[in-house]
Amino acid sequence: MSEVKEYLYKILVVGDLGTGKTSIIRRYVHNIFSSNYKSTIGVDFALKVIQWSPDIIVRLQLWDIAGQERFGNMTRVYYKEALGAFVVCDVTRQSTFEGVTKWKDDIDQKVNLPNAWGGGRIPVVLLANKSDLVNEGHGQHVNPVEMDELCEKHGFIKWFETSAKDNTNIDDAARFLIQSILSIEEEHGSPDMGDDDSERIHIDDNKSNSGSGGCC
Image (cartoon, rainbow, N blue to C red; front, side):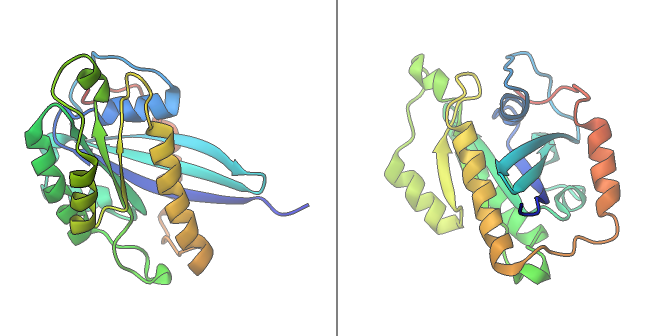
């Protein structure tokens, strides 16, 4: 019987205020949705354990970073040791699309893959969220050609149109990002995450089910 491998991946979830970051996380981790979340202050995180395959377990730390913290000095601390990220925008608010490139640039400047993995940029997926509102007559669906061009220009590995309310494409987006990180892992081997790795896991296990509010 083959040995079971366990991986811990820290994933950032960033985007402008009110784009649905916490709703996406709670739908993905707990399969629940509410329209009454309060705005996240600072950072919140959740843990999801995934039986990826018979011999691979992935522990996903999802760090929900508040929109009002954008590009502040604290983001460098929050970004530390992240191996992937989601940048979230709201399909009904054009201004949030303009914000995604700034978020992507901020991630590229402040976090890199471990040296053991060759360094470089972490994989980032773009989520065009709240497609359920478009179905209800608010705004319009994103243009796939424009989204492809945006991703190619700014280095997103892929984009998905999502809805936390309808549970649309959230699992698919997460699987794509995890697979991207696993592919790097398989190519380069497990990175040395430093002496504070066990402490990060311990802190997360205590807080992952805290139930604190987040941006809707």
